[in-house]
Length: 106
Image 1 (cartoon, rainbow, N blue to C red):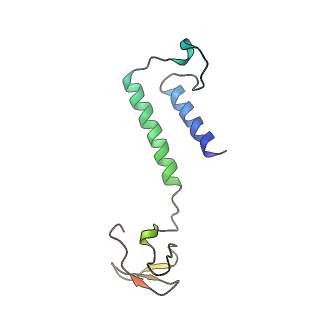
Image 2 (cartoon, helix red, strand yellow; image 1 turned 180 degrees about the vertical axis):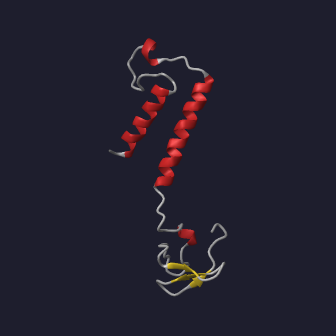
Image 3 (cartoon, rainbow, N blue to C red; image 1 turned 45 degrees about the vertical axis):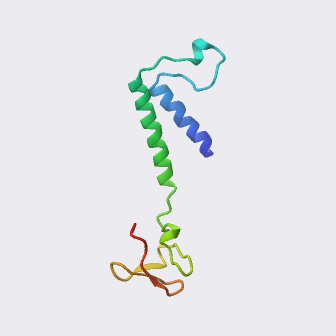
């Protein structure tokens, strides 16, 4: 299943369960395509959609790698198996031997 299909299925489920809208497909009928919903329902649906997007984004993070700006400044290594903390402020890259201080984000 591709991401777009999964995303569309999640949005459809949110529309059905929270907004009581049976489908997000246009049906060429005002009676079927326009719905009256309360603002608290819209707010709840938007929050649910936001969280679904957030969860999808964080599930794509590779725990075996650091961000490129935190990798080795000499060779660009980002694999955590090759980046060893020696002190509270110094990292040793076992790939090329460089010792460096990563950004403050760590």
